[in-house]
Image (cartoon, rainbow, N blue to C red; front, side):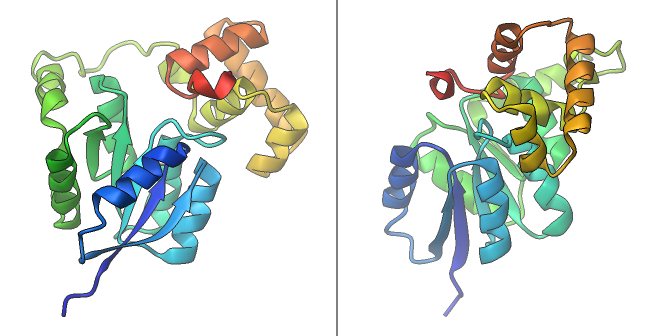
Length: 222
């Protein structure tokens, strides 16, 4: 008998997590071994359960999906990561695959498409939702991804994005320092760099920008 593939779900909406479990309740080859509601929990859950597959939302609280992927990829090179997201732009797709993801599936995909995505990724294949695959390929063929002057967003480092996300979620400098295991002075330095690079000088502007870039969902701020 073939061993079941262990699956961890990292998604901050409980109804969506429950829906995923219910959708695949008939799959005898899959075993859901853990759930996470934010990016830090996702990393801890993977380390605890050593799953074969991580189903990951990109817009996770506290630590974003791309940071989660980069953190886990070095520690778990054999882990398959399938992103489930609302973001359809080729920018997100390309950045996510650069981070080391195995598959990219849009959240409003059909059950059949999601099943195909999971099976493809577990089989070692790359998966991109058909609805956006054409746009991604067009981006390459049209040369839009060739060397060009970096935008302000592209100059923001991974750590600065993590700090920006937490600032937009309302965390204080001391809280961010504790979450990221860095000093308050380092947080202040990252914050100053963010303000300088983006030319955004108040909390409201930083929050709006973080929402625009998908670091923080509107619902998280309500």
